[in-house]
Image (cartoon, rainbow, N blue to C red; front, side, top):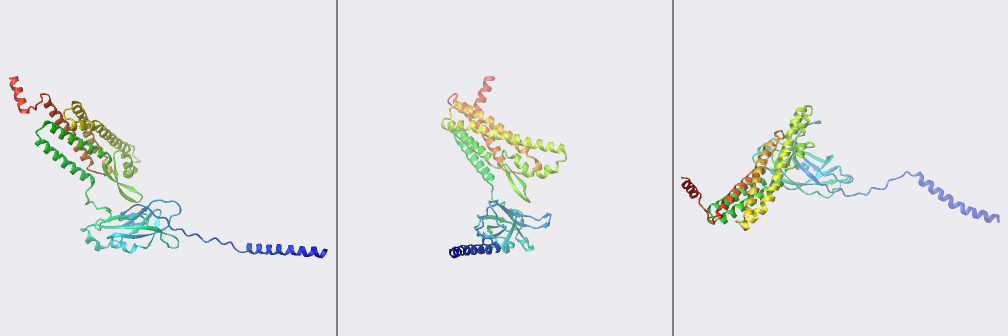
Length: 389
């Protein structure tokens, strides 16, 4: 009996000892991390890109370079990227950088450009237009999906300029189109013998001017240069964005005059005057549209409608007010911003002037309906003088 119990105990102790030995052997081994799971780098998004000129930095003198600003993303972003040429003709100095790993500083990629003396001969030629894309690299050197292509224009004679200024701007195109259309309508008006047709043509010219005046509310009126990080970028100012333009483009002026309260007071006065002129201009645009649009459409249908003619005259007074406000806006733009006025103000001046002239012609032609026959102006003056004598 004792022998049987001893054998059973031996059978139970043996597996327990083996299990304890296995546990001790596992605990004596050093812990090993699981192999990392390789993931493809995220697709980068390019916010902006351009060329920077020679400038002084805290690290020394920095030469011309191509900079690419990436949009912030979620998760861990790659620390190394590659640039790939998509098409076009790129500067010769960038050929050595295509496909090469380039580190990123924050969210910007900087590629230096060494301008050779031989490139000065290309200054009179057309700019070099090219497109490129960016890929992220992981720690193993594997490239991810490319970004959307970005196209730039590089002028060797002026490396700072990113886009060519040879292409016509939209404000120039609209100005000349409006001038040609008004010239054709005026020529047609002079050759039209019917009074009804003359009123319709004047109403059509005023209606086109009202539409163009309303379009100027969504067009930029001013271009200024603002500092974004270490780069200088062009900013377009729309109506109602005066404070944002002053904040981005007038930072150096505000910082330089921070110690002088009188200068700050004058700056605040100029900015408030600019904002008031912008608010009055927007009010004039909306009021002129609300008054003139239904009246002019009704005159196209019925030129003899007296209420539409009276509403056109009232709307013309609002257009005259808007004309004066446009002049005030151009005069109230702060000179220390160093901005360039677009032709949007010229379009607004032309449209408001044409609305006033068209309303005067409509009212003048409406008097011909009093006697159901138009009376020449020279005959009217002769009869008035004969009756007075």
